[in-house]
Image (cartoon, rainbow, N blue to C red; front, side):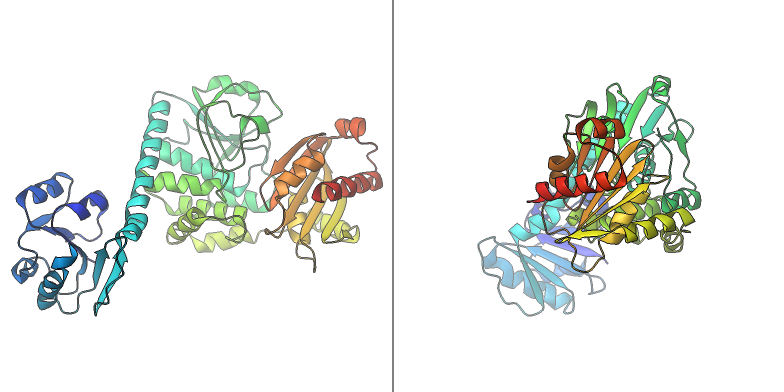
Length: 455
């Protein structure tokens, strides 16, 4: 589609993103040579002429189907529109009117207030400008580094893996010089399938390995989330709340966002980095998994990023990732947990005992939220000497992160988002501050603490 912008001076050119104007033939119609020169200096194409004279439009409306945006004083509108219609009777026209002006009823013309035009055209462009500047700061900071480490949480989820892959693309770095790493391992079946199908390498490292890197970045995680005491890092990009002040030279933390993948998608788009099919698939899955397919904790930015990535992703690969093989261990945990479920009011509790890997606990919490009449699911399990407690809710009740901090913040690490949260408590701390670690005593204590915090 070719666009023609009509205004007395370069008003519309100042609002429109000239370097990325859609349509090769898109151009501006202005009345003075000075205005035309300003448009050209900004990278646009323009012609001059009397806006009320149909002759000027014969030069630009060559097919008669170009989309026309008109922003002229109200006393000149009728003449300008008449001149355009004389040349292109069927051309779609958008008329920009004053903010306080009632939209005039003009046949075949769509009207939009200047305020709305600014909101939909100017503000997004300003946001992209800010993001581009942020990307340039990041690139400048990492430019002189020979080796860069991109860190994720101990058991990286799809959002973290996709965000790490995207950050490497934003920085324009190679896999050899910029590994994606974790202190732990990828345990959940879907996540292992994701890295295998999309050929994403994730390395296991130790804290002592930090010294081998010139710069360290973290995505979808913050230094305080690690048990290990870490030095100040160079960059943190995350969508989890900043519960402890982040020690980083640069940081971008947006708790309102549904996924860190959304933030990185904005980086890629603002910096005009080519988004490969593999990267789009990873980021799309990152957003889907952290927002339950846009059903939980999303904002407009998440939906826009999702829509953008959807066009570039490999949906066949995505289906294979989302339907991985379910190990027998997971089935055993689910069977045990179902048998041990305990409903108190609108909350379903289940303590599944010792499990092989931590992702089984939140996975079962997601499953139990489907129980009829339930608004909260609270699932606990013991993993490698720690008690993991995962919480999910339907989204319109109390903030899950706040409830978990009140319930378990005095004995371990606790917090999260409005509809999903967790607590991790070392068993030695649980024994010292709460009591025994038998299945019944743990279940009773969790029910009591969570119910009290929920009141």
